[in-house]
Length: 159
Image: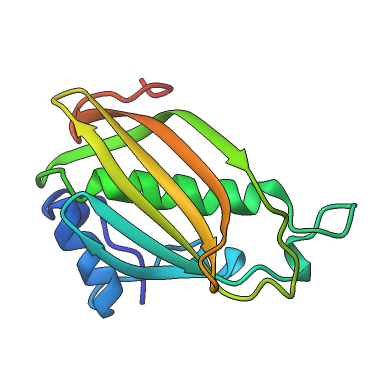
């Protein structure tokens, strides 16, 4: 399924987009295949992603690179913020803090990243996230701050 056009994306609320991806009505997240992650479930102010780390995600020390956990947490927290936004409103991450608690490897199996909004204002939103294994053990935590903007206005780094 091809990616949605920018105008089509702007016409959807964040929750409608997330639920549509989960239900297969909209395309999956493009980098999801590379990261072996997919949408799990979503509701107003929260989002879950499921992933399966493997040897393709290893660092030189033979464990899953920290960027894998960071990507899952950034995704679930940002998408949790997105579920609170109306059509025509977007966001971008301006701060991301990850705390790693337990290493992952190919034997870790499925992991769940869950993001929950702490606050969502007119310009700034914050969310927290957890990454757990199938036994519920906490692997990493995160917190993010996002800039909220109208889709038509210039974003940081653009002209």
